[in-house]
Image 1 (spheres, one colour):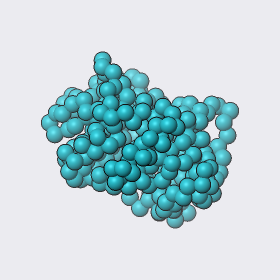
Image 2: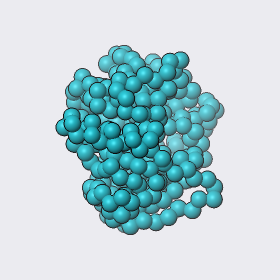
Image 3: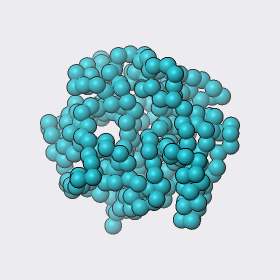
Image 4: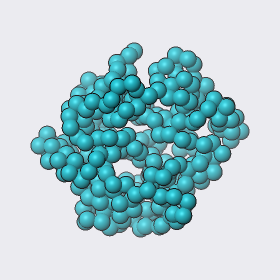
Length: 289
């Protein structure tokens, strides 16, 4: 089993790099920490970076996970190849662009591009936000999968992910004590469905709700409180229709936690009564059959 120990970054192509970086700074509240060879590195915590933007196809997206040792990276490469998956071993230059000492890349059974990194960089400087959104951690993503049942099986048998809860066919999965590090959404295509940043408190959620509306940013859902994880949330759209989320107060789970099945219904998403767009868990649901 491949043992993931960290959730590191997303790499996102964008149709207009400068507009997207401006949105990341001025609206989301991320810090730009570097510009190199067409890549712009941004962050919302004390890691080297959380999101790397580049000019390109918005469908060109990669999620970066962390393994502890090079021996584990070698083992992961062998295990993935044994499953018939193509694996790319990154060069030193490619690793430098990902701000890590080494990595491999593969595509999961849905076609999602995944980097497995070793010794990703930390930062010697404290995160300094471009606006006070209250962000303190880059926490999880929503991942589009073409067959949610097979995707859940892949991440829980090949990797050390465990399911915390289900909503419809969508599994919310984690490799540590946080309720979920990604949520698997049925879809006709691969890709990153949303990107989450944890904020310190509910006040930050509410202040950002007013701020985003004042700046004519389209709200996707919220403010609300997730019925599954307990987190207070606010989802909003950014460039290229990428959905970003602020949340706080996420539930912690341990080995005694037993996954629960929730139906696809408004109350399963929000205990406060907001009405989210349920198409994100209904799209491609027949792939689970």
